[in-house]
Length: 156
Image 1: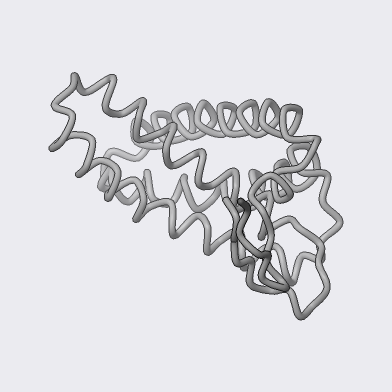
Image 2: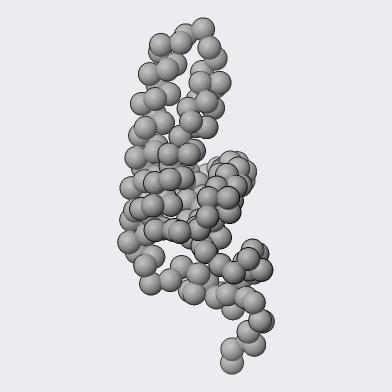
């Protein structure tokens, strides 16, 4: 027996769509490239500017990469035509949410699973990236009717 569908809701399968495997590969490549760029940029600037606190340099490097990574995800991962005035603020919101998710998932993984740090960090990265991928595909880069700004998921 299937539950009745609430008007205006979307199944998770409808959200991710048929292009998901290609989008996921591109998402991983763009994200991996961004991680490498962050490490190189941050390590270089921390070395070249020893008078500036490394945590400030890291924060500035992360912020500096938000727009280029947004553009790469928009173009290559999700092939989006959503207007920037809609997609960019949503992208920034997902990035801010990701910081909180990393903290939450870290607390859960490190306290509950009691695994080695490399495994824990990998799980946290995978969980946070999974949530981010779904939000980027279903909300940030989706081009929907203006009244469909909220994406309630039903019938998961």
